[in-house]
Length: 187
Image (cartoon, rainbow, N blue to C red; front, side, top):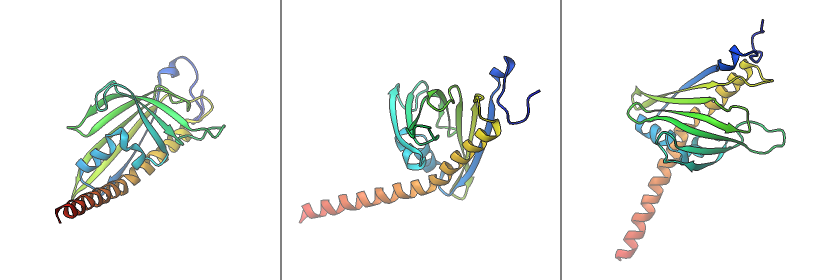
């Protein structure tokens, strides 16, 4: 019999997944949160461990779209960056949710998936629910990897509000500069 926290072994365990979820409240309206979290080009704004996100195939927002995310998501022995190739399985703007499947990586999470769902929490705030399902990882306990991913994803949720504020300030600054330039041309 397996002890709690040990990796699964045996044929019937190969199809089993480890599950986890984290959530948090973001003090911003659901449409602003969705605009931030649903666009691959904005990952680095709210995911501190992501350095690059590259489009590989398909159209962003359309199931089948493939992206390559790289950065320092998972420590590597050679101190190199970790990378994950993800395929979009579902994108539903009407329910503010999406699912990405990890197809290949150098972190051992191939076949795992991440789901993000937003819910209007009232008073201009948004509930972010991030669930994940991972294939058992040899040599790592279920408890360890679920706790690590939970910590990592919770830190991302905690950064969304600040990323929206920075983006809004940058937009206002840009508009003010454009307005000022336009006035200079009129005189």
